[in-house]
Image 1 (cartoon, rainbow, N blue to C red):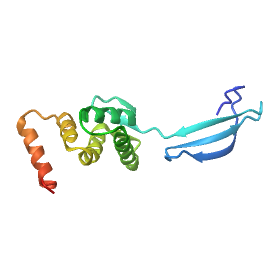
Image 2: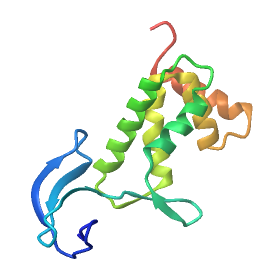
Image 3: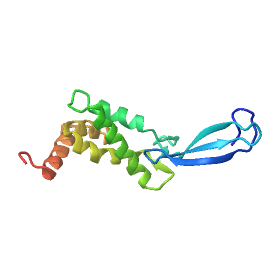
Image 4: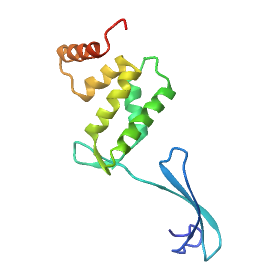
Length: 152
């Protein structure tokens, strides 16, 4: 780690701590050359393999933005979206894989979204699964009703 002040290529770690969510480590460092202190933050990059073959870093914000579109006009608040984003990120990290296919991220979204709002779930599923007819919607609604019958 280069010192940001004098560019010395060496530094000494004084203190290490996990962030609140456990997704990163903060390290307090000291430069032996100039004596100044600085903080670094280390995170593990989870990569997403898209259908096109391109890979990009995982983004919780992209998950929340996609789900927000599906929830438009529904009684879903920002806290619920943030919680869903966190659940999806935890599920992705729990796989232990450095590069995850985008398809698996969609699957990780469907479960929590179904619990959050069934209409938003149908909207998201219709795009994610590529519904092409009313029959596709009808089949998905029947699956929803089979698991959670109306009136219960």
